[in-house]
Amino acid sequence: MNPYEQNRIAWDSLAEQASPFAKVATDEECAQPLLQLDSRGWLPGSVAGLKVLCLAAGGGWQSILYAAAGAEVTVVDLSPSMLRLDAREAERRGYALQLIEGSMDNLSMFETGRFDIVHQPVSTCYIPRIETVFAEIARVLKDRGLYISQHKTPTCLQVVDRDPRHRYVIGVPYYIGDDPLPETPDKEYREGGTREYLHRWEELVGGLCRAGFVIEDLVEPRRGQPGARPGHFRHRGMYVAPYVRMKARRISNRHDLAEPGPTIWMPD
Image 1 (cartoon, rainbow, N blue to C red):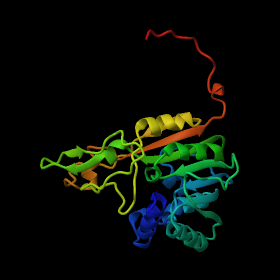
Image 2: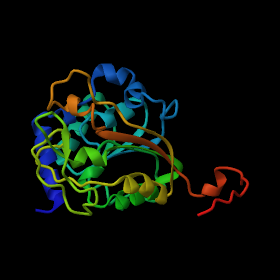
Image 3: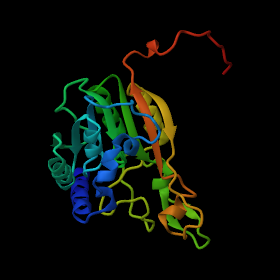
Image 4: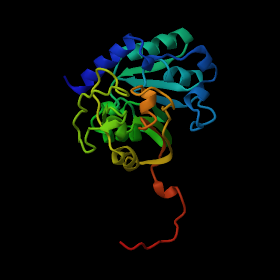
């Protein structure tokens, strides 16, 4: 089975099982949608009228909050069951969404420069080559458009087990290439039934820059909790940062970013 089909089936199952990853937006969250979407102040003060692509973001949470904030929302997701949650919640609340079943690495259905914002939750781990995703996003974003994304860190995906002293064991090679991750005893931060891939920091950060983005901020959302029992995802989160979140700007001409400065010679 190819990875797209395997991940589609897995996410359909997660949606149908009411997974926490398929939690729809509540009335309370919709009352202050930007606060829910953007606790760090990365979004503009208003998204009303802006064209937003929620990429690999089906499930009735992100799309509904952007719609509640007045944005023109499009959702692309591989899973029909996740998209049905968006459709159900949009109909219930009277929102108009464009819902498209498709993969994050093929956005050929959109014209160049269509969107003001692309918002992508953790999902690039399901694609073998992340540079294809970044290239597609760069194409469909307007100049100076905003790309907000969250990814699993490489180290998070390298953990395979926990030893008798509750130390987390790195067992997946960092240079694994395009091979999928092997099955491991440690299942924390791994979604059941999916096929995942490790992307190195060079690919996550360097790849984003090479695709034409300028990174404006980078944070590691804390998922650890002191005192959590060994083996719990909160315990592991105290030792291995599971996620990285980035705010990036699509810049067509990087020479516009700053005035030329003095040339500094550095010896090799």
